[in-house]
Length: 557
Ligand code: NAP
Image 1 (spheres, helix red, strand yellow):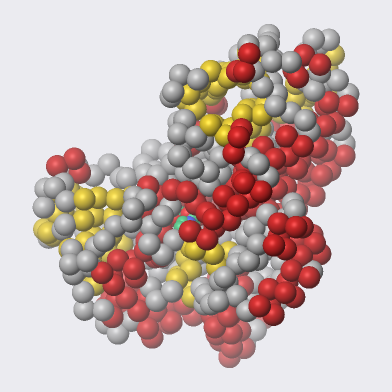
Image 2 (cartoon, rainbow, N blue to C red; image 1 turned 45 degrees about the vertical axis):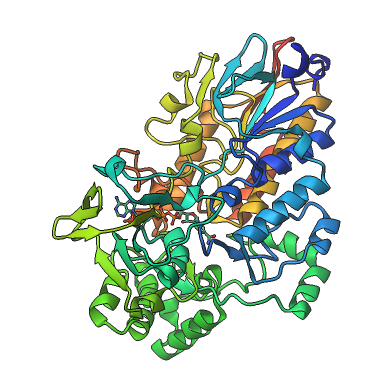
């Protein structure tokens, strides 16, 4: 940093960097920036740190990536000392882990809790971002990191009459801390994505009756969760550094699976059946998608895997009419986030559980005592909305992000800039919004990867970039319009070569009425993305403009 940025300008409200969000990304960014000697403040809306794992407390909430992968790698001591009891971490375990990390690295003293950032404004003259919060705090710093998360804006559909509902209603992503007892109640769950699929078996155990309103049948694979075998854990931990490095060379940032070498169409039907069966038995979604190398590229190959899962549904669910409803037919497998379950399909063999086809008969209105579809009235004591999030852009759109930089950029607000869909360079910066970094932003593989690995990679890249600037006396960095345009085109080109755009997914913004339909993540793989990020850095931050604003000397990257 240049000398002035290290000096507070307005007492305690001036910092070297501000971070929005105290989840995994915000905490890691704080740790790294502090390591550079920076004065940092983190604002977090929750009353505790942990982001997604702080809010999503619904029964059955569990990570769908294995614990030994879904954890920080930056500290060998940390990764050796932490013990994961199960193959996949539950929400309480993961939150315990995050709090342990926060305490172990003394992070909490720089986190302001219960405080939501409402606006972020860049003043090009002062070269500073000013954040204002819902508590009236104002803080400024030359650099701002948006660690706002991709699935942090829960969305309840705009159902008529919800305000008149006399029972209790909940959203999976805003679950009460004290838990909910559904014993003896008539319950509706609306939504059958990852959250619905995880919570439905738990609600079904307690509720007197459970009606599940399914709009789109999803592909759901067995998690095969189990206690973590001490031998497996020891072996994994003895190779942790190599394993973490190897994960960066994979498409999803998850190591340990041999890369598939052939097309599903090159295998005989018997061979395919054996392969899919073995993957089904082992559990896990990446494992399943790794059966063949073209499942996300060729519709014909994809159909072989999709039909295998449909057959499984028909073999588990006794009522074949219900099984047919549960068997997904409107999108290729893997193009919406695959769900992992424990006893999900089995739940429909329970007498107290009814599946309602919310595609054929959508929910039309919430009534004081239940809800109504086009065909029927239902009485409910409680409604659970497992209806998802305004993904990837929702949290940023809630903040009034403004830039004072005009020429040559047309937009002054991020909302305006992204009105036709998000545009970024590498998912890390937005042209026209200098010194504002995104972690796992749209245009990066974040949501299509082991998220903690991506968080570390993005943050490490940002920290290296800031060090590079510090060493050269530079204090402003912005993505060039041309580099951003080329990256956006590349992201689209890659997506269009896959089957992903064929599904109405939250990756496309399709779950939010009126949201632009743009495929948001980079699906070229973590391995290619990281290589590109490293090249950009090696080439002097190619595609970025780095400046010393006091000297106004531009150093084109
Ligand atoms: P989601 O995948 O977006 O699912 C929302 C569900 O609500 C969908 O079934 C959707 O139907 C339905 N829905 C939305 N509006 C509706 C309406 N008006 N009427 C009827 N149904 C409606 O949300 P999510 O389940 O919360 O999961 C979001 C993401 O969070 C996941 O994809 C995953 O990345 C992450 N997550 C991960 C885990 C894990 O690690 N195990 C757990 C939970 C969440 P349509 O499909 O027709 O839109």
